[in-house]
Image (cartoon, rainbow, N blue to C red):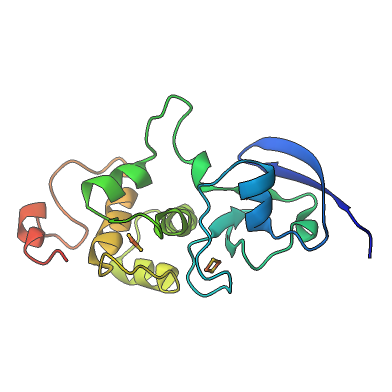
Length: 180
Ligand code: FES
Ligand code: FES
């Protein structure tokens, strides 16, 4: 086995031509070689989803993929969401407004999983969100606010937000009583 392999990879729109060990995981390449620490490592076994990024637009656990497998691929991390001026992406805004995070450890994976869902299903139902993010673990929120955040993000992205209505027809005030 060679000591190093060449990996030509596009990350958040920037092309990189790298040499790395064959055993380097995508998560470590992002965090250590490309200084993108937004991708979190939790279980490192493919269980928690904290390390989720988009590889060629597909939600992927970066702790389970060798960087060497991704020569020619395009990767998006949580750092791709906000604008260059710091403007939050609608998904980030929705998570903030709907209290979709507490400690934030799971949040990068949740955001990228939500990103993939919203690109496939612009205005998802609660069930769609539960299915898409069912494998992403959060030890803080009880999940209710995360699901609500993703539905709200869909409305924001569709330009249908700000009428005070939630995806299931309740007002934010009505729903506040069930927040975790
Ligand atoms: S760190 Fe990758 S799934 Fe948990
Ligand atoms: S917000 Fe703490 S683990 Fe999800």
